[in-house]
Length: 217
Image 1 (cartoon, helix red, strand yellow):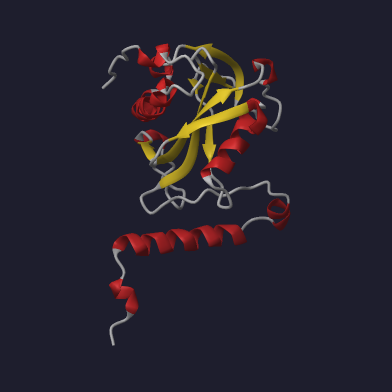
Image 2 (cartoon, helix red, strand yellow; image 1 turned 180 degrees about the vertical axis):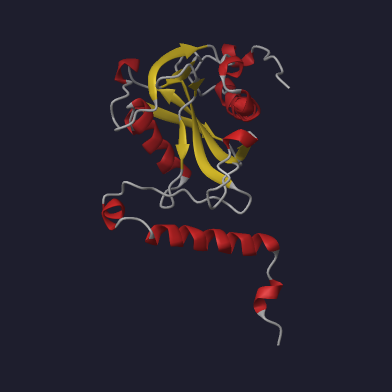
């Protein structure tokens, strides 16, 4: 009788090994860390992509929230990993709170990307000695409308804040400012979600989105 394992394809075997490595890593943790939830795990898929959410937050003028990372001259949209017990929307609200101080009642979800969008890290940023190996992110992106005063934005809701400054910018400006290896995924997310701003029932000015965007590749 042929063993069933030989009927598996390579992707299934890699997925199994990834899961086993994840479970092994849990048992090597200090029990106090686990109980206090000081360590979170983000499952990396069989192709090496970590699940993640990205957030485009806009005001009624159609400008978008653009934030500077702590201590460096690097700007980006809020984003973060999806924990094993979370769906993308739950993760989005958690990241929104941790990174901007905004809560669910401060925003309105206008839409989300239909499929995962992926970007790969440059070779020099890949931690080749870590297992499972992470080569990039796969992301579900959300576009949100701010329905409260922007004075509610604050960066003191977690021990290690992600950002130390922010500003409203024109819709496509992030493509001129984000790190080069994220430009393509930003363009895809902003193109898909920006179309929502043109709907009659969305009270956000779509003029910024409708301006022609320069191609960067």
